[in-house]
Length: 349
Image (cartoon, rainbow, N blue to C red; front, side, top):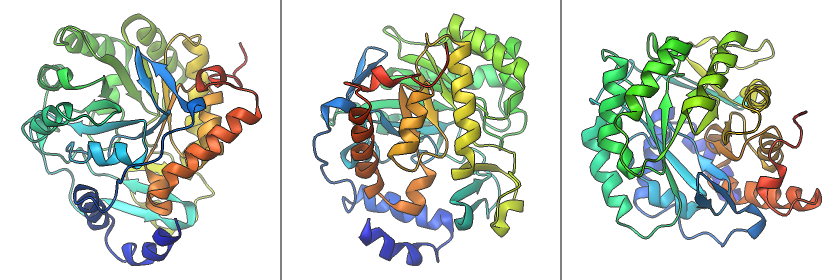
């Protein structure tokens, strides 16, 4: 952490996307991602019949092209979610399209699903599956800007699902026109049916990543669809809202806001979806996780697993080990023998 604190001013002189590319290079080169210590047994959990050494994962958006799965797992994550991957390669939106908000410990992005498509990701996913690196792999799917939703998600499922422990349908990014409209009940049911028709046997778990800006009726509809047709939810994606207390000048940029300002709205939505799904579905909590306390709050609000990304921009890779240490201390302090015992502890039945 101290080393990263010294390097951060230099990294922050680079445009965010260039700094990100440098981080990916360091991971691929072995400069980051050395073997981490064994996790405290209290952190182990089982979701979808798969064992997680710890509940902390890397969110989609960091490794868009499935390039650094093994190094991230060696860094200490219990699972990694790659993508979003679209059927065809696409460049995304014009630059600049990523903005740091240091005063708010936040980031705004309007990347627009920039990625190398199935052709770039599939060989890497296949090669990763041939390695002995332990950890759970999620694959996050998006649609091309000019694509048809059902056809795009079905094509990606057909090509990539066999490599995934879980498959995430992303219909909640604010940076692809019309994408969030797919969160309506009828649209979701058709889309999920198209994806399920392409799942291999045995299938990966199928989850949906939702927006924090949903209306109350949409939340109830999504919960009903999830209970009937899905194996879980990811709560939540970035927000198009701009809290009044944002201080950084970059707050006026368009795109999805992530990081500390997203913690409260995403955690409130997490608790609501836990109630609406009656605690019957695993939820992945993401949004504003930056220490053990925020990870623990997500778990107590109903998350079986927790993801982060933006906080790493400000804290560096040592944050993974620190969160796990703090989380295990909090679980033991409150008398929980395992993560699963704490899930939903703060949500009234």
